[in-house]
Length: 211
Image (cartoon, rainbow, N blue to C red; front, side, top):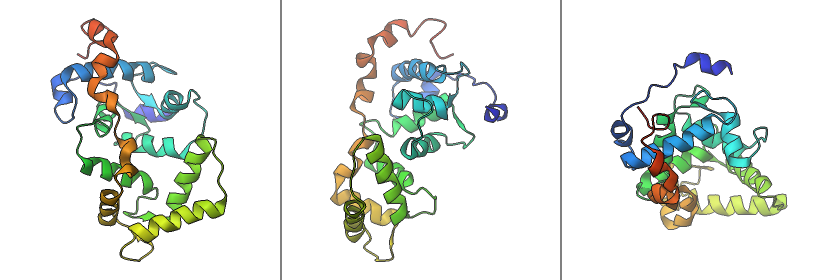
């Protein structure tokens, strides 16, 4: 875990300060800290979520290779130093909040597909993600069917007919097909205290409260 050498141990901030740039309340931030603690201590109790811990949280298997989870991890790890701090965790998770504006969700989804970070979504990038998602879902589709889906997507989205989809085209495409970013909203984030009442009852303990 050499990447941890580049980071200082996390210094907890006031939950109000942490909540301010997000769509979470102070109480929700405290609840999410408990979730973060659980994830970040699943393999090593260091208050950082490693890629292996992230995969363990998603798949119950820290060794499972997944392009989709790799891309999500990379986007959560905004400092690009190989681990996710709590502040990065809640800021990224906030995009999935039901009250987060569509523009933020559209931008995040665009970055997810832009694997090579060129500022465009390209044919092979879409194919890689589709195949990764199919594999994780244990679904099998022929290459012809996959290519047909991608070709239809580019026919509809690539209005400039240059073989790639830029952010403007992606925004217009999502406006016409809002179901494309349905996965970008996690309803229970609005009611995380209700969904996990134990967070509320224990949030004031010395161990669990953000200091």
